[in-house]
Image 1 (cartoon, helix red, strand yellow):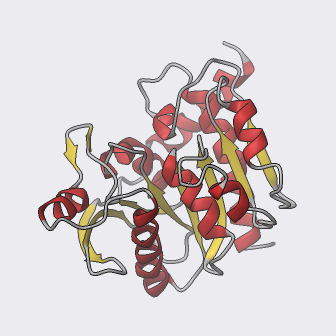
Image 2 (image 1 turned 180 degrees about the vertical axis):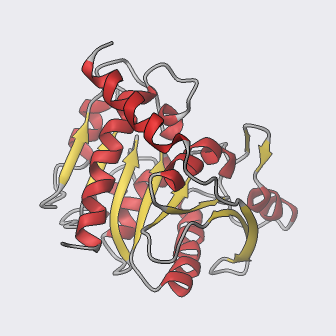
Length: 249
């Protein structure tokens, strides 16, 4: 067994006997009164918080196994249904369904207010800064929000890109971002991601390029993906640094 696999297996053995935490389905209004559905995975108020945001055509179901594993690593999580989405892992996107029924805006940019509303829910509950984890278009939105919102502690962005209009919208809105960021993608996407975040000036700015071909978005963390171990190790290295920033020794 190589060192990478040994470390990962050792971590999994370490957490196997830890308590399994609850998944609670909740809802709250977005900035335009759209009803947002989310799965809340609370652990303890003293622990850090991660807001999990899915990719296009997906739902909060993107994070079923991911949120549970993050719980075991010591993070409260909220996996939110954004209005630009669909169904994944047997979980329908209820926010997107609400928006379709009521003929309301459902663009990627319109989903920004859903992320901010979810952040407000978490901040009102925990009264501490939030780590944003975004996937594809929501990774781009997470970086933009981090550059504008004081309630963001840091960002983990999986496959961000210029998914908004105009085509340089994201790069312009993240210029000068100085909060901790972890950025990753498939190997093929990596050069474009490097260019996208070139004007991010964070002291902690990590771009992880996988040794494998990898994949698009946060589904690289799913257990069935053969390369999930390397992504998890890179992500947890970053998240452990976030713990130290929030609670310095």
